[in-house]
Image 1 (spheres, rainbow, N blue to C red):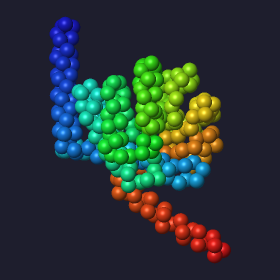
Image 2: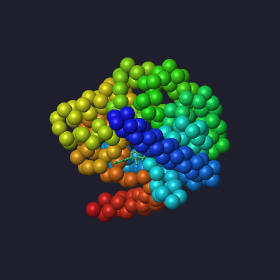
Image 3: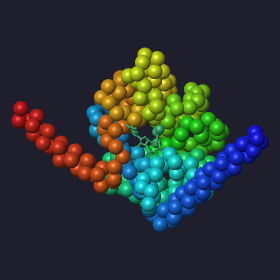
Image 4: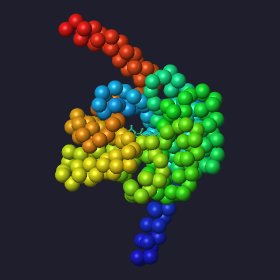
Length: 286
Ligand code: C2E
Ligand code: MG
Ligand code: MG
Ligand code: MG
């Protein structure tokens, strides 16, 4: 009897495994088609100067509206792209599109996420060089964001890749800092141009004393290496104030702006430009 029940469970288990695999295969196939037919898009989220609250840059975030299913989170499809050999072409699309788009915003920095699979590729530096040349973008306005997890797994390689990328003139940022096993020992030797504090930490800033102190210590750690720090996932005024107080020079989050189309970013820039002379006139008249 027990054996039979066991077998029944096995069968059920196998069936659900098959269903999972089937769904995954379907998703992978749709993703492949989306990449090939250019159906992925980029959204851009404002990066805000903590002191002036001016928009100084944007982070490019890939978006996929899967036919018949609606939007799929990059947190779901990026790992699938990684394991199915699609990350190369996806990453190339994102980088090229972001660089092309950046040309309409001469005063903005543009951050682009790089996944471990791209970074691991020995030819990655070559294709970054190629895209920079092809799009004629100033390398210094492009920041490549790499995640903490990858860095910890491959410290030697990471250091070499960062060196080569910086040789091209692009900036390199450490993304999601504090989400995993951050170590000051690692940070010092890599030459990151910027560190981004993970949203999971920022969220706790007004929770309790211990979380607040953890966060403060994490920012202090980055600052002690003279590396500028961005706080991501800012949703409230209190979080913005606290993160600035702790020493973050750049803020990102829904409080300042959600990821939007490039057209909307251009509009925001135009509005700001239009508002400036008016503000000056006002002061002059007072
Ligand atoms: P990330 O690089 O840490 O990007 C920040 C994520 O936090 C984005 O999610 C953004 O929409 C979200 N976010 C920003 N501010 C707030 C906030 O105030 N509240 C909340 N709740 N969320 C906020 P998204 O676009 O879903 O991307 C998730 C992750 O997927 C990214 O995390 C990044 O690791 C990866 N990703 C996104 N686009 C790309 C891409 O083009 N290439 C690669 N390789 N990875 C990407
Ligand atoms: Mg990022
Ligand atoms: Mg991040
Ligand atoms: Mg994050």
